[in-house]
Length: 316
Length: 316
Image (cartoon, rainbow over all chains, first blue to last red; front, side):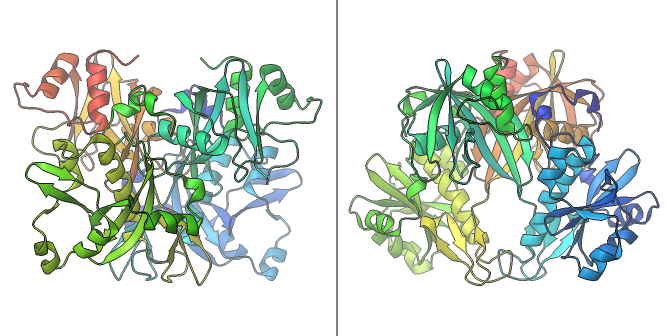
């Protein structure tokens, strides 16, 4: 990719999992001899997922995510393998292994299974490697959950270096799935609306969000979700930033939205509470100094960027 | 929805298929007694798809897309049925029928099967009904092609008023699919880049576009696609507008993109040609007065909005 000097120059690059400088060479994935050559090259590496969890190499406090294919086979029986892209000159793949056998997981003392959220929050590997792990996680999850043809029920075969599955029965071609989600900071005068889902940790408030549906624009998906969850009519909607969100495979589309009214009616289903917050309160929530111990989402989430940008009035 | 006065106030509402004022009541889809009541109501109507093609009622030059369920059963054996939303006070559903039997299709002289692109281009039904047909088309296509569990191959069962399929074997829940696509007008100084795919009609040039992949932001998907298809490095990317595109189920995410270079290298695979055009030339292409008979996409496509907004310099 030629865009590396632009990393950090758009808002989306400030979100978690956004930095990924791999050259995906998507136009060459179908060239099997080319992919075979990459697989055989001595400098080629793979990241490994055991189910949905990344496998890391651990040496004290140092972690690594790159393995040889030989190491991957030692750790577990390999399932799907996908080409992620070139990291500089060297190819990087992703390998899905079935749950490790106890013997394998005990055989090496330098292997740790760590969930991707913790890897990112604690910065266990470098930012571009976190991006590659996010790419791998969504892609491998799709394989793990889409081995059969949705059109006819037959077991499908992997092709295009792990970016396609073909049905040998009905010939249907299946591609990895990315689900667009709208996530929005609703504003009215000098306040913003944040809500709580029942599953949130105590005191945490975040932006409203929901899956975009068939037949919707981004702006109308924002309006529908806010109206359904909080009973508020929305006027102007502005795109703000986007983020790949690998839990399991979403594209978060972050927007700023203007409410035409301030009478909130919580649906009680998706949200258990939603209320208006001032800039001052939001800053306390971000700093974890709020007198009622309210808090905002961590930096990993695009909600943090939306909320902090609004709080500091830096978003226009 | 409370947002009707905002229709036409964001750019996305200027794209084809974007206007859809149905109140989807997505939070009530799982309430089967509520849905049953709607189905039984005398004012309830359904749109009908025969495979991927809308079925219309025709009376001379007048067309309609709303039928009773009794009429739907007359026209063909009903497959999946989905709740689209409330049109004012009345419920609107979508019904998928298997290919009509010759007897059925000949039994009524007032029935026409017309593809959605033609319906929209010719304005055969009102703009909001075109939006509802687009919503129905993507949703019913998903049912038609996803009847089996991708996780285990078992035939799944429809639930949530047609917005979910459940696997009775492995308990997996499956939801309708919407594929995000980036489509971008690449600019450099006073020119924009348009390209030709081999399948395009002679003389037609359009924006570059491609599916957003696992682990990408919108901006980086734009950069990757332009670099892969035309060899151009891209700096700044700005979101412009979005569009539901029901062929079969995409979300088109329209962006303006600044090229850092003007040396185009066409990949020859996805594009057979790509070149720079001036505003004057683009206006001729939109007006169909270009001396070489080059043309731009029709108003239905978001590419037309991107190109015409740039040509008239009205996009900031």
